[in-house]
Length: 235
Image 1 (spheres, helix red, strand yellow):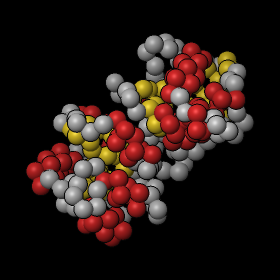
Image 2 (cartoon, helix red, strand yellow):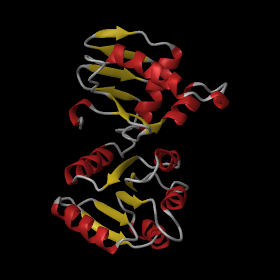
Image 3 (cartoon, rainbow, N blue to C red):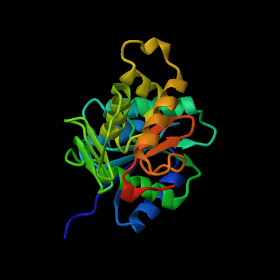
Image 4 (cartoon, rainbow, N blue to C red):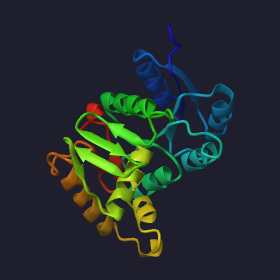
């Protein structure tokens, strides 16, 4: 019998640590906690967790700095917790520093658990490789081939680069600015979120059965987009 996956929760609220410990334990995870960013960084190196849940707003070493420090040496999945009053810009900052996903407090338990399962599924190098195939959509990033229902789909260079960025990052949310920087390399100073939205619209028309009700390319309002596996879609 395999050992349970280990989740490190970093939050300066003792009440939140208790709530998350009970919730995650009920779902079969081993839970370790840290009540400060400093302690959290120590425990990342000491305990080697499979996933980290990280509060952004902490005194001392805050969540952004913790995320930045972790990403210097580890690719462990990080889900950041943001309060409802935290701006989209603050959330994007956490994602740009390397967080994989975010959940807004107060959160629904099933949403958090779904995000955790999703991040853990995609955390291995094998699952985060160059191919995606669910029987309906096949993406081969090495040969630049995309097939929908057995029919090869032609993508423009920018459309393919946007799709490639989303698939490589999955299940991490990719901010509008990061997508723009990856695709429009030659003019990153001309960032315009409308360019991103237009090309996402083009991709959805080519990949989705219903572009208005997407399966694969999901919008995180005010933040960015994520590529979602067909068999793990959460709405």
